[in-house]
Image (cartoon, rainbow, N blue to C red; front, side, top):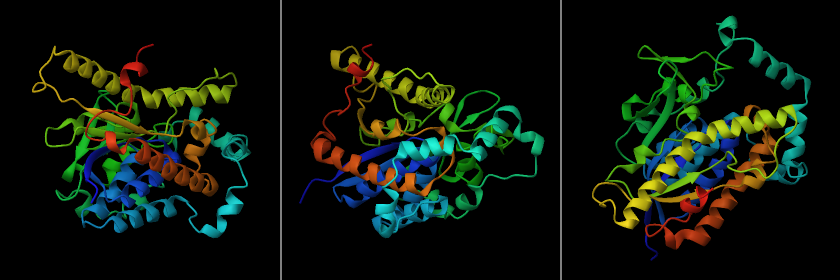
Length: 339
């Protein structure tokens, strides 16, 4: 029987693009060789993590997969295979551009940039609330199953707030996914919170605990690199969004690279700091065809394609890097930060 390997998951936020993470989690849950020890998630990553945790608390991988499907069906996913050929007839870029240049999206985008959500207080509510309220929070907050952490950004201090165990509530998850141009800040214990992506997308440091495995698998849904410099106004805004929501992750990865260098050079004792192993699942080629529009508007065709892409990317990762789990990083952090 193949060796079981324990890993920690770091699930990025990115709105409806989180359907990519759905596919990645589906593939991991299909593999009995993988045990999920802990999850840190932000925004869409927090929702994916909550659905996964709810199932794994019972020890049932199929329940975790069913929870993820239920989550994304509510968001707007179409999973009936009969729709596959029709959905795949449209490229992600074509759908993204169609949404971007549609009149309703243009009006909504302009409104969000010029009018504060506090001006129409009481007339709108976060559409995610009814979805999040459907989670079984006894399971989400349970000590059983994988550790689970989510993060949000404290509006006043600008600092990250990590919620865990009984701190994870409907409001905490909504805070983790609160875009300030669309929704009022979420108040928790007298503090106001915005989307966690500004300070931790996702937070890696909760996964450094000595009782957890060394391996962290980052499911990345915001392109780290683009070959072309954006020139149109929309492309510039898209890239600003990507950079903003990758900054905190890159900062933590750079810190890990620094510690690795000290440990491997013998400058620092392994008892002082943990030698974290980093892995990543991503599909930048697909994500570069998409935009903020497809993050905000959960189009069924794009969600179906993202789910399939996440499953394929994770399948490739496991085929290529499974043997490295527990022994070495499959991401060359030194090369990543060499320039």
